[in-house]
Length: 378
Image 1 (cartoon, rainbow, N blue to C red):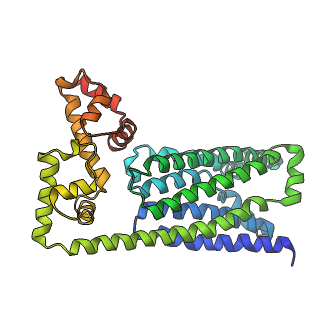
Image 2 (cartoon, rainbow, N blue to C red; image 1 turned 45 degrees about the vertical axis):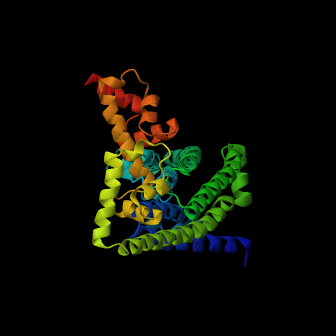
Image 3 (tube, rainbow, N blue to C red; image 1 turned 45 degrees about the horizontal axis):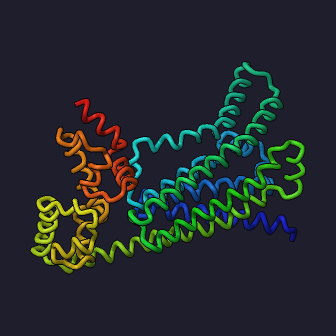
């Protein structure tokens, strides 16, 4: 058996594994948006892998299959970066609907559809006699286009990997990431970064016409797709396992709720509301789960479980929502016109300007300065 046969088999099994895992992830019942982002991410890598395998083992020699492959794009890399970024955001309980412009992140995918549109245009043009039957110029253009669109693909994946890392770094302390979950996500980002470095090393000589053919004859696409096959195995299995871990942790929280009687549950809800809405405990920048638990006379684990289930938020989001509403109320009043945005935020309980800016924009869609400007105009 040739070494290329072994490498092709690795790519094939990686693609099959990817299709299986992407299906399991896409139809996962827990944290569906995050699971679907990861499922689609794995699917697009598997699709590109099966396309390479098919070319290497001559699957596409039949005219009808070549026709289908040319019209249906099988290499879609531009969605992978946004999917990675939004997968991580969704695990932090930031659903895609919280970002009103999230769809725009996927618009560059249309760049990868251009070759298929050109093929469709050529076929229609020759059928109706608008274009001469000479595909050489079209084929040459598409081949060159596919070469240089790899630069856009690499830049896109690198940009979104950086945004994912930045989000993890900013939300490590304040987000909803558990320690195990955070370790998996940061490792995922690091592995994508390592892959991008490897891809860049391959991409530089590939973009130089005098080296391109020599590079493809010497190593083919194996330096890129073998790591992708390994990534599919690791990412699909680990991602699915973590979705199951989250389901298990969620079920544990529901068990805590069952330990409270209906009377105790109502009593705790009222106590929390009184401390937050009457006593304004959120104005204390040092307020944490333990201190709130002491104020309502219940264990921190019980308070955390109730906030998650009854209010549908984690503790930080729950408290920050009160602080944001307080900021809105004070910004609309005339007695705070002399105060800076940072000053009002501090009075509302925020201890960090960076945290306030991030949380406020995520909640309202506006930067605090823009929101205050709108309030003043009114």
